[in-house]
Amino acid sequence: MSKSKQNKSTENLIMEREVGKIISEIKSLADKIKENLGKIDWKKIDEVENKISAKVGSDVDVWEGGTLVSKKVKCGKRGCKCETGKHLHGPYLYFVFSDGKRKEVYIGAYDKKFSLTYIKGKRAHRALKYLDQALKLLRRVEKLVEYV
Ligand SMILES: [Zn+2]
Image (cartoon, rainbow, N blue to C red):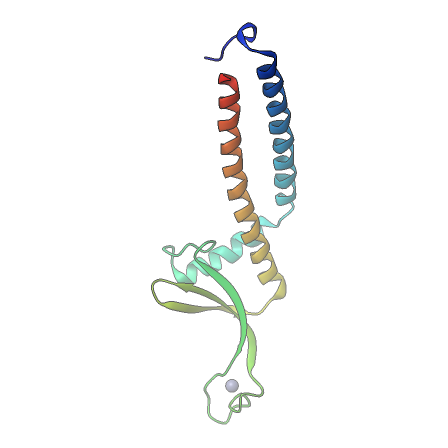
């Protein structure tokens, strides 16, 4: 239970009011972040995530456990234009991750949008996680101020 207003000093009341202002400012910043995240094409990102999961298995965390890279490759066929290393195939997208050993899984032909969408989603995903942590800290501050 919080102390009644009568038992609090003026300093305490000022502090409570100031902390309250700070918290509400941070909450409105959080709302802005969420609003911006809402503009991301989550459907496209789900597609990318499902595609990667289908290839690497559900044990691998697509968001935290790897990264998407594009590269040009040699096909290995004798007499192919790629043999000399000058005219490689691709670029193709690979999901690179580690399960103790570094692994590369072929995802598909390089599509700039596809890969940018994924990176955007990955950043947004991380931002949301940080935001959740920040809000948890704020709730602790809120509780502390109540008891002052
Ligand atoms: Zn080739």
